[in-house]
Length: 245
Image (cartoon, rainbow, N blue to C red; front, side):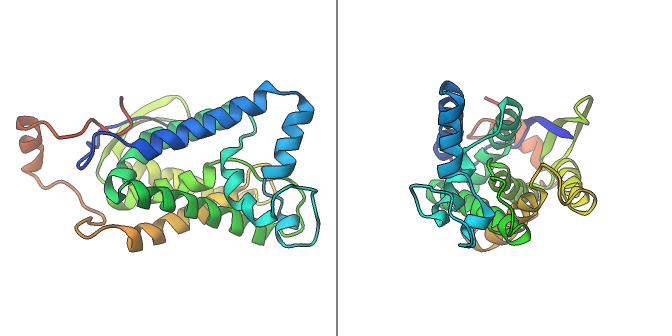
């Protein structure tokens, strides 16, 4: 397990990641709504807005009030417990603002949702006969992680490796390890409780989409040149450090 604590990558274009904050707020509010009701109301929310692979393929109806394809979006805002939402929002808080800064507000929202949709589609494709609901922002956030690796491979990240060992390394090492863990689980535990294939779908979508959606002038795999550190220390960046507020 890799738990990000802080990233030192400054925002370059905007001081406010409005969309990222809004996504976190919506996720938290929906989760609190899930927790505030009875077990029956939470079950009703899951039945109507979680992604059921068998319903998506049209083989089984769940009695949901919305068409099954809409759950490719709605499932992204549901979570299965406090630990689930905490770690998802921690990743989104740490890395999402930098991707929004690079893409712009509207493109970032489209990017985020498309990554989540791709994650849900791959999960449904792999588990076509499953009637187990898929919930969580993990697939969309995996796309954010892939984009961060490709845009900011040398940004310094402070993280707890295995939840205990503090490390400060370039993002390509920290997040690359996280991505490798997802691939390992797909191979070693493909039928486990966690939807590992959704993570893989999000990672793949993020890598592809950041390549085609990035505005002109946004460079992939860019690292600071040797003299940049002195320049930054002499002239403070225009934005605060990503993920540290």
